[in-house]
Length: 82
Image (cartoon, rainbow, N blue to C red; front, side):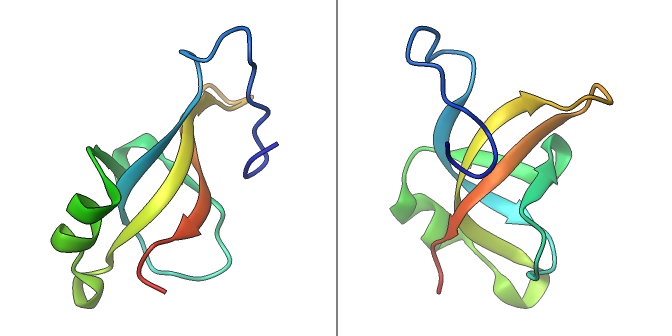
């Protein structure tokens, strides 16, 4: 399990681990709506494009996963700019 989401070895195309930019205030939140996350090619790209003063943070995430309410969510694995 990663970030509250189970990864299915038989269907790896459904939910995957990604590097991303997350537009959010850092805190205890561990999941983010799809519209707050921009998937990028690598950790280096995420770190280069991060703007912490504008709440745009580099992260490793798992998703997208559909919530029980029908939203597509990404779950935080770790912040890259710690």
